[in-house]
Amino acid sequence: MYSDAAVALDGAFLGGPGVIVIAGTGSVAWGRNEKNQEARAGGWGHIIDDAGSGFDLGRQALAVSLRAYDGRGPQTSLTKRLVEALGVEGPLDFPGAARRLDPPRMASLARVVIEAADEGDPVARTIVRNAAGHLAAIATAVWQKLNLSRGHPVAPVGGLFSHARLRKAFGSSLARRCPEAEMRQPKLPPVAGAVWRAAVLKGLAPEERMVMQLDGWAKTAGETR
Image 1 (cartoon, one colour):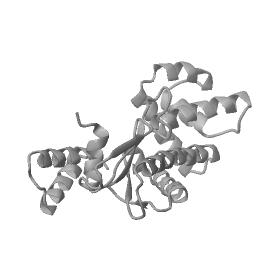
Image 2: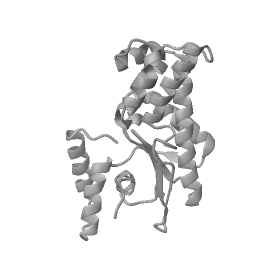
Image 3: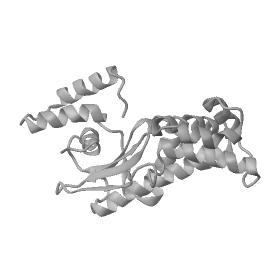
């Protein structure tokens, strides 16, 4: 059985060594070295983990808004934004609304957090910065497990990294935690990585032209790295 993360890793480096960090609804880091050894960190589910994921950002936004309502934390524009996003009357409705949200819907609130951060909300900026730190931490953990060295790549994968603020914060945190790592753009998105792997398993050696075709197909299909 080939995991989704391993397929994404194939797409990112075309079977070569390196580490990917996937940040979407959930989060996980996965890597492979020259000995074909693999390691992972994070990704233990939204109930106990998935730090730095979209779900985590949404949950954190609701939490800080309720702390602000209580007077236990600073005021934040996230409260009003969440009221509008959830279609409720006020923060007192947040606990009930949260219980009704499935993980993808909770993760969709990450957009609210990043928009608030982009517009200068200090609480939202802290949430984004902390999320980037968590993602850099799991990347570093995998890097160390595999004994990777300078020049090996780390690629951010998943919809959350489409936001420039989070991507930049992740790069900065990674540089502090793992200065030998080289942050790179994935060569192919996960869905194209699956096609690439299928070709390899059939004994084919995908050439650069095929890789370019797969990349073009994935972009046409709207797949993101």
